[in-house]
Image 1 (spheres, rainbow, N blue to C red):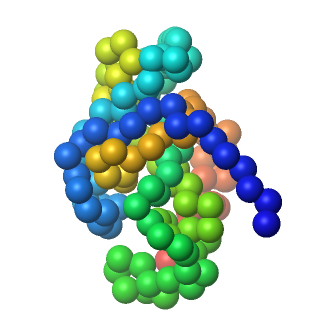
Image 2: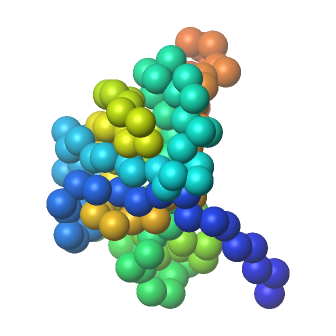
Length: 140
């Protein structure tokens, strides 16, 4: 099996001890402390209203290719936001509230306290309004 390793660039601080449905995180503000050796990489990040946070589901053990979602539906892992994934990588687009030095205040991050952060990127939208309507999740 091929393996890839990533450096941890920071950690999540929010006091949340247990994972839960995405909706429970929507109003929560988390602080991401970026480690000192990566802090220079935050230069001008506050110019972006939204950023993508890539993180590791550090408490998830193993994975299920077919899983039950928080609302009870059965889906394939790649059609869900389950933390039990083959690579254990999570990604969430969050609102960047503020930056102070090497600390970012973000809203809506669905990660628990102590979660390792792997990367931060400005969130970009390359889709037209028409294309956004097309890519919306299908409703049953």
